[in-house]
Length: 308
Image (cartoon, rainbow, N blue to C red):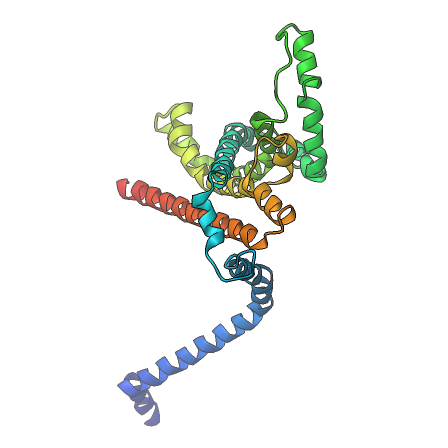
């Protein structure tokens, strides 16, 4: 009985607290080591599949055609106007396609989120159905539909809407149409998932407080759906920057994007250093834009919560 108060006194003393702190730190280190051991296979895959190729790309971009260490591959961006033109075209296509996907995908995702579960599941099948078909097959299908003697021009001429076929393929418009169709599900799916998590009690509460349908959507539903919309926009935009098959076929050689320029540089001119430099520049600009996008979303969220 006399030893228990002495033990409690020792634990409550500075030495006891120090021992307790050291034991907690040792437990934390052991837990961290166990987590690292569990994550080591995934970390190895990330290192082997992502870090090593990117590092090799950076290293290869430092050498010119003669194999000498040089910055000539990066100087091309400022010396040749074709590089800048291709760069601007790539981001122009990416922005237009992303905007078109938002305009088409948001109403579609909203409609799906308001349908009963069974009807929404059936409609989602038609959204996912294009994934079961190759991108190459879908691109050639759009070529058949949009060409001067294709289905759309034939129907419009038969209906008397136009007298001459419209130029819908082998140009900028064809690239935008084909890429929008292929990338639209990548925006609809995360946006639909975000909309389904919105609590309907929040909407009912807004309507009970006197807000109409438009005000409820604008002030409650739309802000709560922004995380899913932001995820879809980022996915579509990044995929647009590296798209190759659809622009190469639907553009008819008139719309040259960054991925096509890299393919030409490596396969036609066998200049792997210049092609690697193109990839490095695209990667750096993409990461910078993603960082800016994340910062803008964080600043907006901070402003919204501070205003409340």
